[in-house]
Image (cartoon, rainbow, N blue to C red; front, side, top):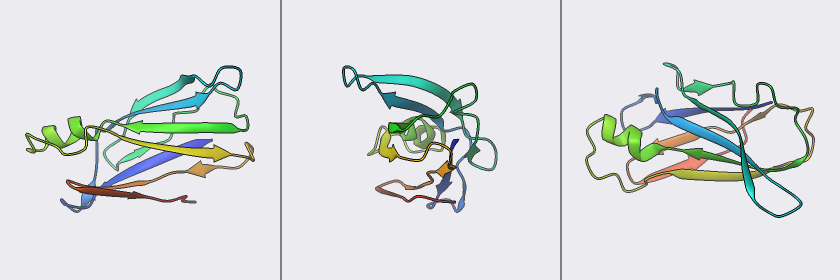
Length: 113
Protein backbone atom coordinates (compact mmCIF):
# COMPACT_ATOMS: atom_id res chain seq x y z
CA UNK A 1 0.00 0.00 0.00
CA UNK A 2 1.14 3.57 -0.74
CA UNK A 3 -0.30 6.42 1.32
CA UNK A 4 0.51 10.09 1.73
CA UNK A 5 -0.38 13.17 3.68
CA UNK A 6 0.30 16.86 3.13
CA UNK A 7 0.97 19.42 5.83
CA UNK A 8 0.78 23.16 5.08
CA UNK A 9 3.67 24.55 7.11
CA UNK A 10 2.85 28.19 6.34
CA UNK A 11 -0.69 27.90 7.69
CA UNK A 12 0.12 25.30 10.34
CA UNK A 13 -2.67 22.93 9.25
CA UNK A 14 -3.17 19.76 7.23
CA UNK A 15 -3.54 20.54 3.53
CA UNK A 16 -7.04 19.38 2.60
CA UNK A 17 -8.12 19.06 -1.00
CA UNK A 18 -4.71 18.59 -2.65
CA UNK A 19 -5.14 16.55 -5.84
CA UNK A 20 -2.67 13.64 -6.02
CA UNK A 21 -1.84 11.16 -8.79
CA UNK A 22 0.11 7.93 -8.28
CA UNK A 23 1.97 6.44 -11.23
CA UNK A 24 4.30 3.52 -11.88
CA UNK A 25 6.94 3.38 -14.60
CA UNK A 26 6.46 0.52 -17.05
CA UNK A 27 9.61 -1.58 -17.31
CA UNK A 28 8.91 -2.41 -20.95
CA UNK A 29 9.12 1.14 -22.29
CA UNK A 30 9.89 3.50 -19.39
CA UNK A 31 6.53 5.26 -19.67
CA UNK A 32 4.62 6.43 -16.59
CA UNK A 33 1.16 4.91 -16.10
CA UNK A 34 -1.40 6.34 -13.66
CA UNK A 35 -2.68 3.76 -11.19
CA UNK A 36 -4.45 5.94 -8.64
CA UNK A 37 -5.89 9.44 -8.12
CA UNK A 38 -7.53 11.26 -5.29
CA UNK A 39 -7.47 14.31 -3.05
CA UNK A 40 -6.35 14.72 0.53
CA UNK A 41 -9.08 14.60 3.17
CA UNK A 42 -9.69 17.25 5.90
CA UNK A 43 -6.73 15.77 7.82
CA UNK A 44 -4.49 16.13 4.76
CA UNK A 45 -4.36 12.35 4.27
CA UNK A 46 -4.93 10.12 1.27
CA UNK A 47 -4.97 6.37 1.75
CA UNK A 48 -6.87 5.08 -1.28
CA UNK A 49 -4.30 5.52 -4.06
CA UNK A 50 -3.57 1.81 -4.37
CA UNK A 51 -7.13 0.54 -3.88
CA UNK A 52 -7.70 -2.10 -6.54
CA UNK A 53 -3.99 -2.23 -7.42
CA UNK A 54 -1.82 -5.24 -6.65
CA UNK A 55 1.46 -3.83 -5.40
CA UNK A 56 4.56 -4.84 -7.34
CA UNK A 57 8.20 -3.85 -7.02
CA UNK A 58 9.08 -0.87 -9.20
CA UNK A 59 9.52 2.87 -9.43
CA UNK A 60 6.48 4.91 -8.41
CA UNK A 61 5.78 8.64 -8.59
CA UNK A 62 3.41 10.87 -6.63
CA UNK A 63 2.36 14.15 -8.26
CA UNK A 64 0.78 16.77 -6.00
CA UNK A 65 -1.16 19.73 -7.48
CA UNK A 66 0.24 22.22 -4.99
CA UNK A 67 -0.31 25.19 -7.31
CA UNK A 68 -4.06 24.60 -7.26
CA UNK A 69 -3.99 24.23 -3.49
CA UNK A 70 -1.99 27.47 -3.07
CA UNK A 71 -4.37 29.40 -5.36
CA UNK A 72 -7.34 28.08 -3.38
CA UNK A 73 -5.75 29.60 -0.26
CA UNK A 74 -4.99 33.09 -1.54
CA UNK A 75 -1.63 32.70 -3.30
CA UNK A 76 -2.35 34.03 -6.80
CA UNK A 77 1.17 33.27 -8.08
CA UNK A 78 2.40 29.98 -6.60
CA UNK A 79 6.10 29.26 -7.16
CA UNK A 80 5.62 25.48 -7.44
CA UNK A 81 2.80 24.41 -9.80
CA UNK A 82 3.25 20.80 -8.71
CA UNK A 83 5.57 18.56 -6.72
CA UNK A 84 6.66 15.17 -8.01
CA UNK A 85 8.24 12.56 -5.76
CA UNK A 86 9.66 9.41 -7.35
CA UNK A 87 10.65 6.46 -5.19
CA UNK A 88 11.47 2.78 -5.48
CA UNK A 89 9.39 0.03 -3.92
CA UNK A 90 11.52 -3.04 -3.41
CA UNK A 91 9.23 -4.82 -0.95
CA UNK A 92 5.66 -4.46 -2.21
CA UNK A 93 4.26 -6.23 0.84
CA UNK A 94 5.34 -3.28 3.03
CA UNK A 95 3.37 -0.09 3.66
CA UNK A 96 5.00 2.90 1.96
CA UNK A 97 3.97 6.26 3.42
CA UNK A 98 5.34 9.35 1.65
CA UNK A 99 4.39 12.65 3.34
CA UNK A 100 4.81 16.13 1.86
CA UNK A 101 5.60 19.16 4.01
CA UNK A 102 4.63 22.22 2.00
CA UNK A 103 5.32 25.95 2.19
CA UNK A 104 5.01 28.63 -0.52
CA UNK A 105 8.72 28.52 -1.47
CA UNK A 106 9.84 25.09 -0.38
CA UNK A 107 8.87 21.54 0.40
CA UNK A 108 10.28 18.47 2.06
CA UNK A 109 9.47 14.78 2.06
CA UNK A 110 10.59 11.59 3.76
CA UNK A 111 9.64 7.94 4.08
CA UNK A 112 7.11 7.82 6.86
CA UNK A 113 5.67 4.91 8.75
